[in-house]
Length: 589
Image: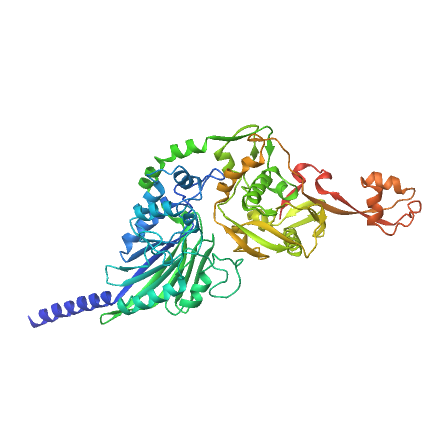
């Protein structure tokens, strides 16, 4: 009998010990999304392909994670409502039942921080957005300016852990902004004293210019990149920094502090795990970790897909509306667009230049799968097809010398071998690394990476000249970012919106009838060895080069009537004038 009681008491002790250990340890999951751009269905409207992304996938992932762990927090740091055709439809038509916002609520977001795209919609729309969202909209520097926006939110989890979340937006648009550093300092100090949270999250829809862990520059400095100042001022207070506004994946950790950017389009999210232990009545954060989760690895919930597909018909009807017409058929090839001026990229580039009032512009974020425009009506969907990725625009002030450096830097991705242009794998996968500039006239030499000629407004471009240039924002951060010049204006409007509102100004009666202006050419530097019996005039004719240019390029020629066999003449030819078979024109290496 005594032995039986010992067994019972021993088992009870083990059970109680296990229960106490379980109660003294806890894991919390924080999921971060940003720059979803209104993507809902797993479909890329720009290039008409399946793509595992968007809020339906995020909903599926979040539902699964919540089932695993109820100690769960879901935060988005902006640009969630629109920027892709599905989201654009509900914003442009100002439909009361915004299905993107409805799915945001179904997904169960705890916190949204308005992005620059949301801020650009204006105060009235932002008020509606805040009012209809089921969670908390945080922006400490907009409190009092927009009804319903809060400084912070403290979420008390089922296990009693308190997560304090603070939000701040970059100053953008016609709002009255308060000093976000001073406001945050006051609020964080107060919450630490009065609430004693177990972890603090600082979420911003602003970006970063410098890697918060390594310190190297990763983006062109901009007033929107307030993340650097937040890290500098609050790194001793905050456990998790969540950034936005940049289509980057960043998963950084330094001294048990997390830094997060989850990518774009809802293609992935960042999952942050916090490990706590309990000493008495106080939880202690022992460790944090972060990983990027690709939606391609997630099994999508078919019920939520079916729900979203109910609204696809009205979106497609809107996309099929005729907006303009073309009097000509215009082909497009992603390699040819790099080698020679293209009307497709030119129309987008000139629309941006006009909209931003720049002098020159870069546009290279084109759809690599786009085949061109067929003569006849042009639908809204076809215009979307001119664009490869969702991006806004920055306006830079830079020197003529910096413009030349940008052009030369692009030439590193091309080489010439056996009369064939070779494209580096980098630019094949990321065509926006090769900068296509409109507004200047220039000729580049493919086989030595130099600029043969460059003019602006009919005059040679001098290094000391000052120019105003529009640039896709996506080009100013990440891998090999464009870091030349100074940002003088952030235009936080999706490029497709710029195109739709401005392209009509470039057309006659809404019809594309003009040709490209051929402002850029790709040349090859060639050599000819003078043969016995050659005359200067014969050589110039055979090479297809004017006698004047041949004399200028070859100072060895003192008298055109006296040329010698064995002399080597250099000359330039437009690469596409060499006309090899098209299939052998170029290749990726």
